[in-house]
Length: 114
Length: 112
Image 1 (cartoon, rainbow over the protein chains, first blue to last red):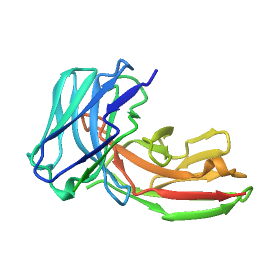
Image 2: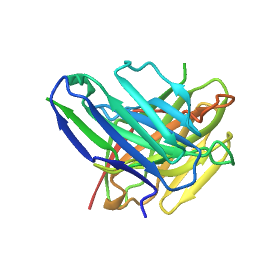
Image 3: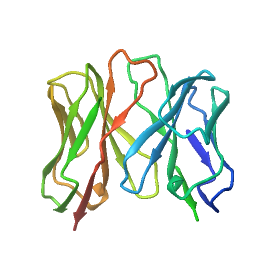
Image 4: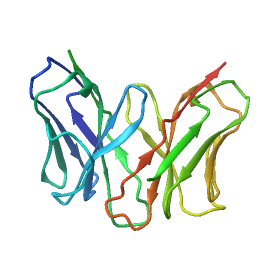
């Protein structure tokens, strides 16, 4: 039983295309996140949703649009893909309640724009 | 702005050779400091959360400690299966949303 699952695992696409990444968690968490890990392995937050409400929106090009249909799902749509969008995108979830505020991560989606 | 600096960038150890990884942080009010392990092609896996200076946590060959400015991840008698990238992250108190700010990680290689 995968706690946080992302699809697809690999995505190779041409510049200018539009693509989506999907994430689902079965942990009962109320908050979900998108993080980007660049070629230097540096993880940086992009967005966060709590119970379908956008609560964190970092400085990200507006070509990136997250959507959360319910608290167990978070999708990321990217328009007009650019070479610089190539990275690994991680979904994560956590609970804003309780003592442990850490995340559970998915296994990542490696996006390559050619 | 919250900052996390990890050192060294890479560390090679012989099996059984104990060592420590460092995580220096700057945050205006620490809620928690987190250690994660990341294997190639996988997402980060949670190891520890530390909340206050002086706190220590252990798991198998790993022990994490925290001061007001830095955290150490001590690895005692490492084995090849401990090879991974170790990530440190901080969470600011009072900031809604549980945002984590990560360091760049330390790549650990343990040779048999």
